[in-house]
Picture 1: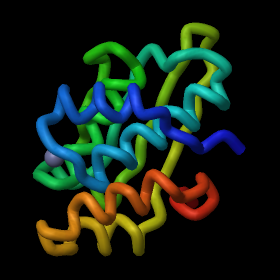
Picture 2: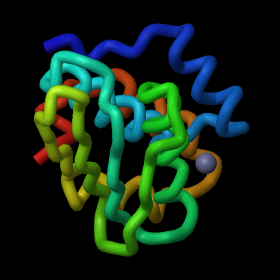
Picture 3: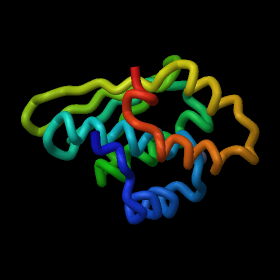
Length: 128
Ligand SMILES: [Zn+2]
């Protein structure tokens, strides 16, 4: 599957967010997958995650793909996002718990290394 992130999209996300990290890229990948399944750009998104950094970094990744601010954050565990399209379709993407934990607890110096790792990963390696 096309889980590839083009350079332009990545640069856009980093510009919006201010730094490169695994959660930002997870947000991009979750949304690209949702877009693929919906067959169109998502119109809205509800993210369930821990309401602090670095978890919330994913929100800017999601906004970058959606090209809108229609993202609602709900306090929860892990990192899950529900997307809806204009055609009424909905899709849920849930990042594997072990990955969320690993990236959330990882040292700051590993931030970019982890980000590139997420970038190179296929959807099946990231999502449940
Ligand atoms: Zn961040």
